[in-house]
Length: 279
Image 1 (cartoon, rainbow, N blue to C red):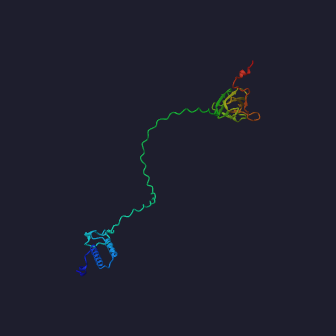
Image 2: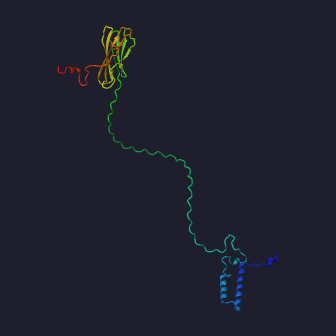
Image 3: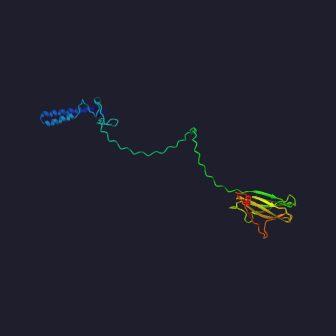
């Protein structure tokens, strides 16, 4: 064993502290006995003696008497000091931290199931009858159509036909049999053909033919319009050729015009009554 270790005192800090205080007391007693130290010095010594804790009271910064047999460090193993001071006053409340940024929106959830159809509501009350609208304007008269025929000669027969607003005169030769076709002449191209306005539009047709033995057979064609007017023109049947034909021109070769017949039938009276008025 090392000799130095045998001579090292095994006294801990508390034991050394007691020995130190005993030496201070002995020194003060010796000075007081010799009269060298005055009352002020003694008072200072007494104050120093009171400031040092006694062995009975222990040191609050050190463990109790049961730990006197071993030396202790100034700090505890957990890093804190053995002497714990009084708790200080609570500090002021810190400022509120800034609000954090809004996080990203979450994903849209899947659509929920379709709800059941609601019950059918009750029928609403019947609305009031609306006012009667005004009578519309009379529309234009539609196209008329008609046909008439005459046969006063064994050599030929004639027709007049109205279709689509146009009037046609026809002739068929009977000398070559019933299979002969009609030959047609368009009378709508003749001068003064009624085509609207006060004259109206052609809406009815008739033919007047007389049996004659001559080669020139004069035939009259008449139309009645939508306004009640009667118009007339004439043609000649030629039987000197085979088949028979119609010529509807005057002596100068111009088409015969349509003429408004004299004494039109009035709408409110009969011609017979008008002719015999006052007789």
